[in-house]
Amino acid sequence: MLSVEDVAKRHGGRVIFDRVSFTLEPGQLLVITGPNGAGKTTLLRILAGASRADAGRVVLDGTVLERSRPHLRRALGYLAHEPFLYPELTARENLRFWARVYGLEGPVDAAAGRALREWGLEDAADRPVRTFSRGMRQRLGLARAMLHRPRLLLLDEPLTGLDDDGRRRFVDLLDAHLRQGGAAVAATHEPMPEPAGAGGAAVARRARLERGRLVLQ
Image (cartoon, rainbow, N blue to C red):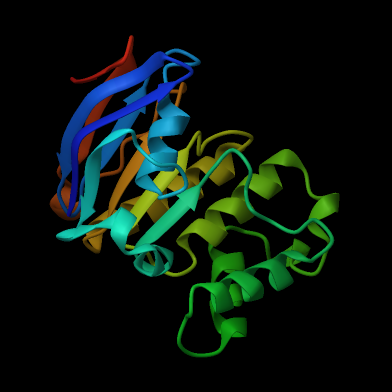
């Protein structure tokens, strides 16, 4: 599904990382760890098309992503440090907006309602997001990233702020995504619960990004 080929990024003459390469098959999760400042967020931004690599390329389903930006909206679900939510809108209004951005077929209200139920946000659906706690914003950010059933999830510190119920929902929904043939890359400094994946087999691969190199473990 995903092929990352010799990707490099530099900033101000400093090499952030160099010759990062890996492949990801349908149903797989890649968990990337590493110290602060190692470049985990930068790598995810490149995979999401939000930042340009200085060398190498990223290929999704045989298509170079950099050359097909309209394709990104439907193929990718991206959770960054900022959840891309409008604080003055309600949770329901935010999800309706993103359903239209993603070009979802069918009523946007149904898609928003489903996501609110999945993430346990029904009781807060019509509250402005500015009133949400950090954990509730994280749930809604994850709901937005997964709203359109993307092929590839890119998750930057997905567990931040989640309570036990939020973590359980995250693992269950990520597991369902992988079972349905999706894939995911997660950058985290916390231990990641490992979903069972299709057939109950472990699907997580692990890598560490440090000193400019990505080492698969």
